[in-house]
Length: 451
Ligand code: GLC
Image (cartoon, rainbow, N blue to C red; front, side, top):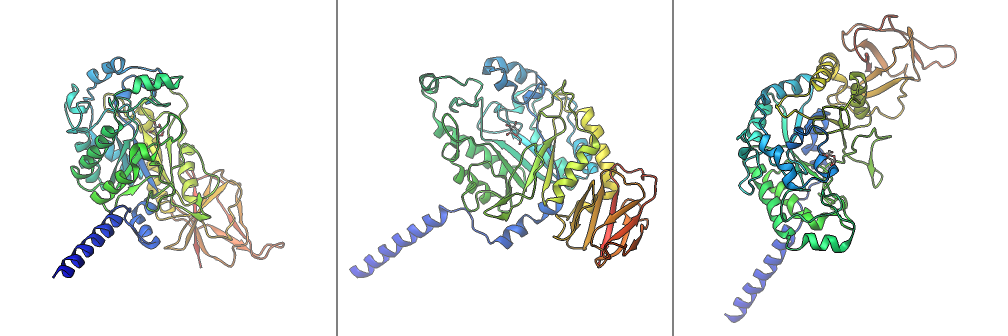
């Protein structure tokens, strides 16, 4: 009898240890399972980022509180004036859809700490501004109705929360350790960590299926913050437990942890090649602005042209990646007119050419892009796409492809492109006969059917 009790007790302890061990780990999955989970995202290739918050009012960068070292009191006027009376997320969603975007990520909270949703854990939220409504709720419903996958950006950094310790990226950053110690006395990051978990729980339970969460960002080191400060692993575990399919960026400072991230996030750069880790190609998405700032910036003049933006998208796909293109709505709740123009232009192109984007990736080895062109490839249909950045004068040679090509056409109007093979020098080249006149398409695309 005694032995039996002892054995049972022993078994119970073992079970407890095992369950703890299991809990301590992020959910495991095989590489194939991960590819499967991320498939919709990889196929989508093009999404919309939206940075919206109180910083839309000063309209001079979402880091304005930091850049100008404002205190909470000085920043308060924006909270008190926040009233985006023209906010109509259905219009936003329609513009995103028409541009060809398949998913969207909105800042539920940015570094300034202001929440666009009705959180139980703070008063610093849209429902307490003159606007008085939960902006996230309407956003989620509107984009879903247009068939886009919906995501949230959630800032780990918080320049408003009383327990968030002052660090090197804070508006009240200091020059000496003693000054930091003095200012941070009484602040309790434990409480802030709890706050984040509570909010992430709210965001991932109260708004239906959420497909992406974008945590931003870590800066470990002296007077910085990293995984221990955020309790990253548990935050992520919570997110994955509430939304098992959710796709997560890599800014929680968990790059070396299995399951600690899903994709990497080169920001405002064109990557030189498909990013790798341990010599393996990894999922990636570049996030880009139209003009430099993420939040609405009235006086910025460095807006990229539609051709540059399309090139960014095509370039990303040609290296196996996604583009998350950002809009910073105004404090009235409208998309900046310059953004509207560009989205429209991109949509015009996408309407006729999206076959070279969706479901596409890097061209297989052995295919060389002609000068001034970018290749993408659809592995499911076996078609190759040649994007003509500079329109050639009548003739274009596809090197070493004669044995691979079955048929060539313009993508936008499915008109045949005739070609000849077997030039004197290289028998395996193809020379395409293009019309002299550039078709009325920003970047014309050749669709090449492969054998
Ligand atoms: C940076 C900035 C931030 C922006 C983000 C987008 O981390 O801090 O303002 O939200 O990039 O990737």
